Length: 116
Length: 115
Image 1 (cartoon, chains in turn green, purple):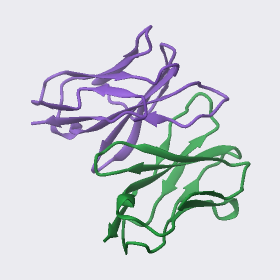
Image 2: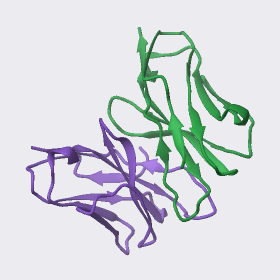
Image 3: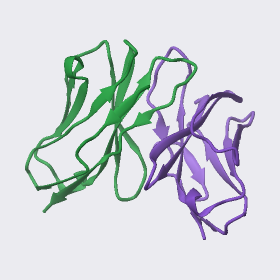
Image 4: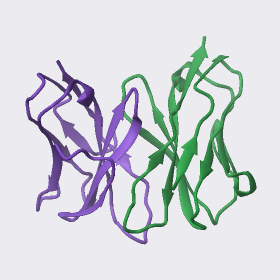
């Protein structure tokens, strides 16, 4: 069965600090897909990134970067020079290649608070 | 704005009642997914429809049912409501299903409160 663990329940940092959110996953599939979503205080779920298991290249998008390490089953998310608008709950999610069941399995989320 | 719309935004009802949540996917998206977010269970997959047909089921209670209509909008029906059904219900959509994997775009959610 697939599982996603976000061990950090809550993190608080001062504005402009860098912060890394951890995500560890479990799956028996050799092909799978990983996602990060952001849930701001308004409540909606905002898609941030998708990563395929066969593409281990790290990705950077502005202040956001993602580190995919297949060897440790981790897909960590780093925010550089954090801003107050980054305050939200961040979810890591996993989708296996089972085409009959395309659900996302979410971690429990990490609540990030950026202190001005 | 993800392009996925959900109505109503808030719903307050009493135990034992029945409610219907509505979702309109992004234009052109054929797959619709329903998720429940509660404090004790987190974000849980309920059910998926693809082009009108049920594709996958998750932790959906027998009191809950869903359908997807020919115009691709979907409804989630919750009956015999209990206090524990209070949660945020999300709808998500993707363009395809099967071998092509796309990210799911989520609607704003319907917050259900059962009193």
